[in-house]
Length: 345
Image: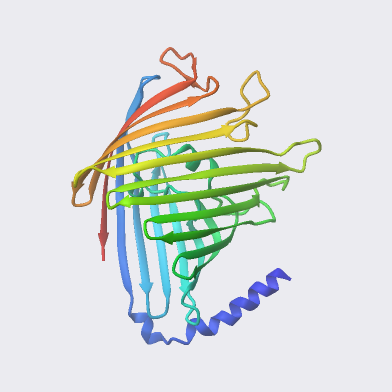
């Protein structure tokens, strides 16, 4: 029944997509942008360090404003950590704004997940590393369909259905669903997101995550942001209990002058059930993992940016190793990163 309803809605939209006429399709704009991200990274405890080309990306966006159509393709090469590169599509989608309802648009394909505070690409970040919340508690890309609607001047709503977390191909017969309600007014931005879906091939485990993000632009050069995240995993196995985690992240970025900025971030995950990091050996419990990050940023001009990052991760148990290869409860890393980005209209 659901499939029939979806097909009927698509057939109803086809006339609206074609009535504008072919002459308007020639009036289009194409933007080409991209970046190269290189770094030097080192672990102060394990004495490991290396230079790396972390990522290179080319993005193409073609927009036809008269008919409300946008095509977006992001092609990337990402360092796989083993001396090679994974190449593929970060995003590839079509976006259509309904002519009879300009406040609503429809996205179909693969797109960045509308959840959380931090963004995926280094050109949209204020430091070298992502937070623990981003890396462990959230999806990055979704393959499916999404509807976006503006609800007045301050509210916006996104609702989507997808194959799963970062899955191009579905591995079971169910779909992941989610959405985000956003509020923006003046210097304040708030968002509440939820995502739920079965994620194993046997369809025995259902993951549900709620995330609240916020941003406060104190002034032109000072940003405060963060998020609170909680998730559960429910299983249909006999005698199995639901498990989960809670996490939060808070950050600030301050532009000291036209060439220098400073970022600070703290985040933590309370993984008492071992859902994310696993059960601590010799116990029946998980652990709490936290990180503190400080990163001066440098605006070198003409699309060239650089930063230095110091990060310390600590856990309630010995989750790391020191310089003598012995268990340790904390570890520190440093990084130097340079990013060049461009945009051709």
